[in-house]
Length: 474
Image 1 (cartoon, rainbow, N blue to C red):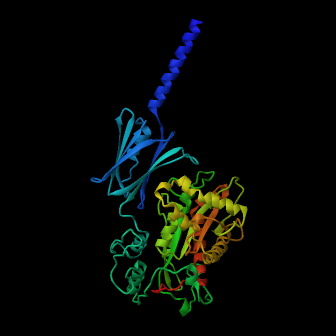
Image 2: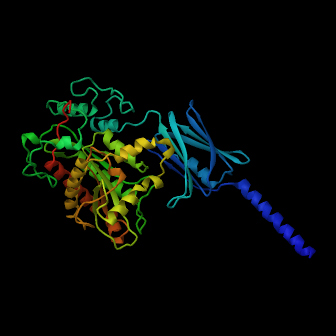
Image 3: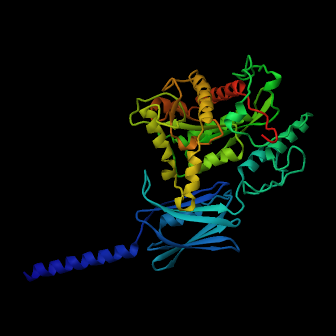
């Protein structure tokens, strides 16, 4: 009896000791990741339990100190030091040390002043608990400045980050408070032509009112001539926003062979960007703008904001589909729906794509929810009508190089398609969950074929729906 009692006491003491050790150990770091980008750099700390932290930002020299309580320095944290890339636009280096018996201190040395956002994410998809450090430059990157710099080189003065701020551009009738006008004026002058005054584009319905019938012919293949009429000419830059889906923390769908959606669609978007930048429609030069040009995550509403900021004429979001079974195959094109989805499959697809913010990780606490809801609720019948026309052009051309999943443009409530004044579509290039189509998506030859099909569809849309000139006062 006494022996049994001693065994029980010993077992209880051992359990208490293990429990105390577990409390001292606290969270266990599972993985650490760094996602550098011009927009912002993200540091992600993934652990098996929520992390309790305190942060201190020091302005000079700029650095962010993060104390993680209940943490012991381990191999994963030490790896963070070596993950910093010399090309990172925001992070100069990272130091990590055991600050006290139960606190690990992380110091992020910065290349310039930043506005840090630190927030936690609960487990979702393949991730455990995540502590996210988003490091935004105080002087935010302006999408419009990016577009202009790409077009006319680095000599243009920097633009302020605030969308409502006055733009520091050379003074001319075409360029006052109008960076796209300046861009077009410079190009026209270099070509020996007269500049056309411009302003930001009007709504979709205003752009297309009083449009004449489509020209007799249009450029539907590389090198094919385009017949135009005087009213078709607008003598201005046509901007196409390309949106490679997912990115960074959000890999998108993953094929049976390990192919990640975010990588495939970025490759296709870059190919399409190069084709657009070398093309014109009805004599009007074209320029592509990528919402992301590297492997980093962008919230859905920010993708919409970027397209509107560069005054895009079209918005094309590029994805690679996935389904529960490997049999599903074929490409699809989606437009926005103000009401119910056109099919259960379209509704399911919209719900899946709209979850990107949960997986990629968005700081909901840092957003004005009313503003974001207002932005994502702004949709117009004219925008949807034009989007369906764009989608039809793209679908016909995609069908010439591969199989279609549905023969018509589907509609559902995709958050990324809700720019009220830009025709917007989402292209599912193929089912990456289908082994045969995954192999095609990995093929550079098929990516080029798909790029050419998308290019022809875009050109056909503009040939039938030429954009109005950006006249002042519209």
